[in-house]
Amino acid sequence: MTGAHDDTEEGPGVEPRPVEPALTHGVLKSLLGAWALSACSAGESKAVEEHLTSCAPCADEALRLRDAVSLLHEDRDLDLDPLLRSRVLENCLGRRPARIPIPEWVTPYDAETARLDALLRDIGEAEWHAPVRLRWYEDDRPSHRKATVAGVLGHLMAVDGVVSSALGLDDPLGAGTPELSPTERTEAFWSGLDRPAGRTLRGPWRQQSHTLIRTVSFAGRGVADLTVTYKDFALPLRDALLERAFECWVHADDIATAVDYPYAPPSSVHLHGMIDLAARLLPAALAGRRRSGLASPPRGLVEAGAPGRSLHLEVEGAGGGHWYIALDSPAAIGSPDQAVAQVALDGVEFCQLVAGHVSPEEAAVGQDGDREAIRDVLCAAASLSRL
Image 1 (cartoon, rainbow, N blue to C red):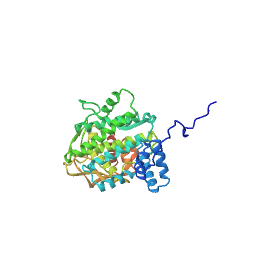
Image 2: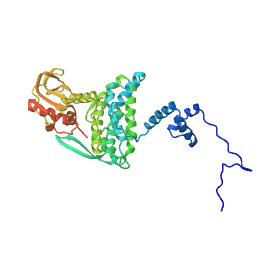
Image 3: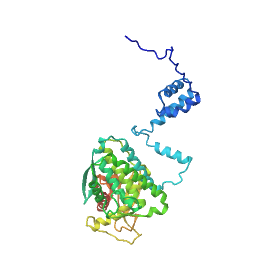
Image 4: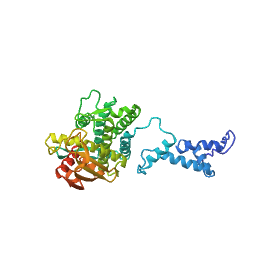
């Protein structure tokens, strides 16, 4: 029987193994970054780890580097302090102001797309196909449509394409797309997919939102008044992006509900802007319903810009405030002196009404005054919703 040979034993014809020189402190310190990324050889890793047991400064630096590397992994838990992002941005911008800052009126869209992206990063592959129930009001009746998490993202992407086209950017429906309503755009996008939508939609959607924000930021002040035309209505770009932020939040909440994910409303400032946009759209929505025979006839038409009969909309809680909605002439000015009714709602509840997630009958906590005017305004608010 032959025994094992000891390679360390020197003998006739056996060359002695060279002794590797010990690494200096400077070399070991320079290897800390590679060690934190697990990019060192086995020998280097062993030398670094032995050094860390006797060098406190290097041990502290190694710990900081390992913590930093852990933040680079996408699969980590995203349940962070919700104020962390704003604190980091505030600190960074305080040190070095952005050369091309994001306009203030774009920040709601920036914030809501970022929040939805964080949610999407945190869900598993199977959850992309979880059923989502989309709800809205149509012809004074609740409507709904079944979709998936990925399908909802496709819907947002398709309707955001209207804003992209207005800015001369690529439309996800393709060049030369005829003028379509948001619902028609969504149906066209869904039917054009080769296979059921999944996680692969996240990249193109996020790229689209980043491109929109970057393009608007570089375009200058005048772009805020650019008209964005949908099939049945038009909005200036500043309002169109606020409306897109609103819908992004509403559908992100739909997704969060479907996958049992905690999701908070927008910040108070952004929520106030969304409520203000809906309040400004109400007189025209009320006039449109009146033309269709769905609202009571006007009682006192006035000239454009003149004060007219109004409803006092009091929104309580986060994003709240007071608005006076002109009831008879869409171009009239709402007036506290001519208020004939008052409605009080919570801010999030009002947005749920505008999104078609609650009925007009369920929405108002407090009502006082002309009951017909109250019903007309609440129904007009629900009519702002759509798929």
